[in-house]
Amino acid sequence: ERLLAMGIPANATGLQAIGYKELIQYLSGQGSLQEAKEAIQLGSRRYAKRQLTWFRRNAAIRWLIRKPETTADEILAAALQFLHESDK
Image 1 (cartoon, rainbow, N blue to C red):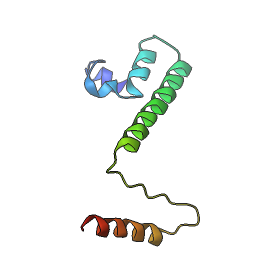
Image 2 (tube, rainbow, N blue to C red):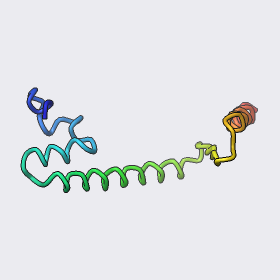
Image 3 (cartoon, rainbow, N blue to C red):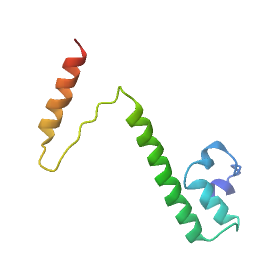
């Protein structure tokens, strides 16, 4: 609301991010707050799914999975081992 009051146009690039555009629609009377909340949640889930898809397809990504029983030192050791191997 403040951003719009400051004169930033609703179609500004920064206001097209997830959360902003939905709330701007709500503020302009184009839906309820509940609809905006649901749209934000859906947009966030879709964005996260696209990110995971991109990461999974990128062969250069090395996943370090931390299980509850894995210590920070073990994760660090795995990362250092990967870096050492990639230097060869």
